[in-house]
Amino acid sequence: MTSTDFWLPEPVRVLRRQQELETTWTLELEPGKAGGRPCIPGQFNMLYMFGVGEVPISISGDTSLAESLVHTIRAVGPVSRQLAALQPMATVGLRGPFGVGWPMAAAEGSDLLLVAGGLGLAPLRPAIYHVLNNRERYGRVLLLYGTRSPEDILFHDQLEEWSKLPDFEVHITVDHAGSDWQGKVGVVPALVPTLAFDPEDTVAMVCGPEVMMRFTASALRGAGVEDDAIFLSMERNMKCALGHCGHCQFGATFICKDGPVLSFDRVRGLLSLKEF
View (cartoon, rainbow, N blue to C red):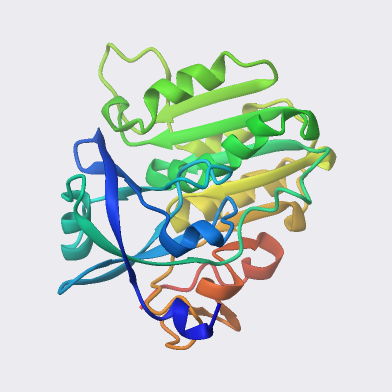
């Protein structure tokens, strides 16, 4: 494998496409050369629309399966809108996988507290698959998920399935809802103080908007979880994915190669800085 391989997008085909929400689709892609590069939960690929541009998209599928790469995409910009509209057999450019993933090995033997906001559930889903594939290596799992409304709940059927598993709790909250919603209403960090868990034996993994992650980290610290046991998936503006362009520089850290998953003790002093 030469270093130039990571600069050049490889054309791969779309195998399957599934709509998740009004503006969100999941694409299953041929693995291409990436099939020979083991992916780990928390990593991302660069997806390239020829003639339009390139964006970083987290892997959202089971990384133990080598026959395809799964990405969940929200159509919000010119590149992501065209990616989300791709049909099976269409071609997309692929670079990757890139970045540091969730600390699955270091978390073995511990309970897991997974906190997701909105589309942030997609980068956490590979970690959940990994736990379920290796269930004996992990303790209790608590998944907290917050989104804007009941209609915006991502992977609804899977959340239901996971909630029925032993030692796997799912807590969902929404920002606002109608009278037919029987669940919790409020922001997801507010769920942390309501939980019973051992902070000294818990590893937390958090993904969502930065403001949500900042308040979640504060709630976790308030509950007694140490800073080096809280991990955040940062999604600042990545362009090259190789640490050369500087677009994702975050203090002395480059999100693309030092992250996107970073422990809170590395970034707590930087989360209040705005992205430009």
